[in-house]
Image (cartoon, rainbow, N blue to C red):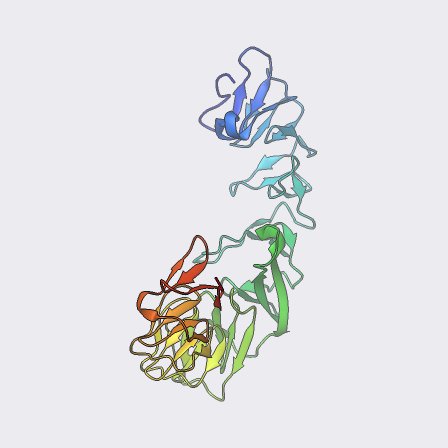
Length: 332
C-alpha cells in the first residue's frame, strides 16, 4: 500500500504504491484484515469518510461500488447514508449497503434515550420507528421508548427482548414484542428495566422477558439496584414478588444470591437450611455457610466448606478431597 488518499478523513483508503489503483484496507491493517483492490477511477477518487468514497461514476463503501443514486447520495449529519429515495444500513456484513425498507430519507434520524446504555440502534422518521434498520410493527407516530427494555404506543405495551440463546447478532436477536394493551395510567420510569403504571409495575430484563405486577395500591417504592426494587415494603426481584423477604435486612449478595436475616435465596428460591449469618458466595452457582456447601439450592452434604473452591478453567469444584462437576460428585 502507498499513502492514504485523505488521512484526515479515513485510515482505510490508500493509493496503490505502483498501480493506478485505490486500495481499501480497514484501518490500514492489511496484514490481519486484508485489503481490496478497488475498481474506482484513481484519478477522480475522493474520500467521504472512513468507509465511504466516490469517483466520477460510483459511490464506494468499504472498497465496493454500491447500487445507490449517485447524484443525490449523501452522508447526513448523523453519519447515515441516504439518497433521494432510500436510507441505507451499514449493519449488513456483506459488501453492499442494505436499503432500510419504508424509511423516509428526509426525516430519518437516530432515536435515542436521554441515558442510552444498551447501544441498540434505534431510528425513526415522521411515521415509523426502526430497530437495527428494520421497521418496528407498532404505531410509529406514537411509539415511545420508556427505558432500555419497555416501550408503548397509543394502544399497546411492548417488551424489547434480547434472545441470549440466539446464535446471530444483536440485529437478529433483538425483538420488539407486543405484550398487553397499553395501561391506562401514565408511565413512570423507575430504571432501565422497571416502569410504573399507576398501581402496576412492568419489567423486562435479561432474566425475565416480561412481568406485569398489579397491586391494590402502590404506596411507595424504592430502588435497590437495576434488578431489585421494593414496593410497599415487599421485594420485587426480576419482576417477581418475593413477599417472604424481610426488606429491612435484605442483602443482594451476588448476581443470583439474596439473603435477609432469616434465609438465603438462589435465583429467588430458598436454599433450605442455609445460615444467613455465615453464608458466603463462592461462584455463580456454588456457595457455603459454616456447616455446608451448596450448589444452586442443593446441599452437597459430603463437601467440607472449610477449603471448598472452584477451578474456573475446568469447572471442577473441590474441598481438597472430594470433587464436583455441576454439583455432582465425581467418582474416582
